[in-house]
Image (cartoon, rainbow, N blue to C red; front, side, top):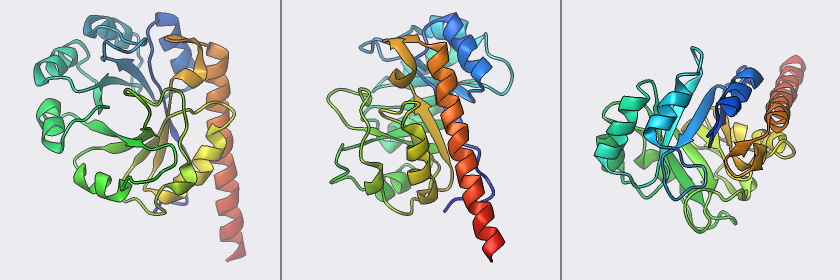
Length: 234
C-alpha cells in the first residue's frame, strides 16, 4: 500500500496549552500541532486560546482542532478563531455529521480500536469515512482519547486503502516499532502523540518532544535502508 520511496513520517504533537510548548514542537520539526476543544479533557483550551496559540505557528505547520461530539455551531466558532485549521473528529460523529461540521475543510476521523484489536472493521470504517483526509487509529478506552494506552498494532488489517495516523500510547520508546509495523499496511502513515511527551497532563516536555521526533526519524531511516537493500537485490 505504501510508496516504498516515501519514508518521511509526518508528526503531530497534540494537546498543547502553552506558548512554550507550541514553540518546542515547531523547533523539533513537528508538521502539525493539536488543540483540544473537548471541555472534559485536561488538555482543553478554549477556541479563543487555540487561536492565540495558533498565531505563533510559522508557515507549513498545520493547526488541528480536536472535537468530541460538538455541534456545527461550536465547530464553526472555533474555525473562525483558527482559520487555517484542520479538524479532527474524535467522538461518535456520523459520516454526515462530519461533512456538515467540516463544511469543506479537511478533517481526520478517529477510529477507536479495542486494545486487543477484536471486533473492529477498520477497512469498512475507512471506506465509510472516505471523505476524511485521514483515519486516526487510537486505543478504545473509557471516555474519549486513548488515555495513554496503545492497542495491538499487529492486529490491524494488512491493507487499508487510506492515509492513517497512528495514535494512542505512543512514546519515544515505542514509536519506531509502531511505524515499522503499521506503515506497510496503508497508503501513508503519520503519528500523533500527546501524553507520551508530557511532564504532566497538558504540560509538554521539550526534551521528550525532541526524543520522539528523533525516534520517528530513526524509523524513517530504518525503512529507507530496508527498501534500498531490497531494491539492490533485484
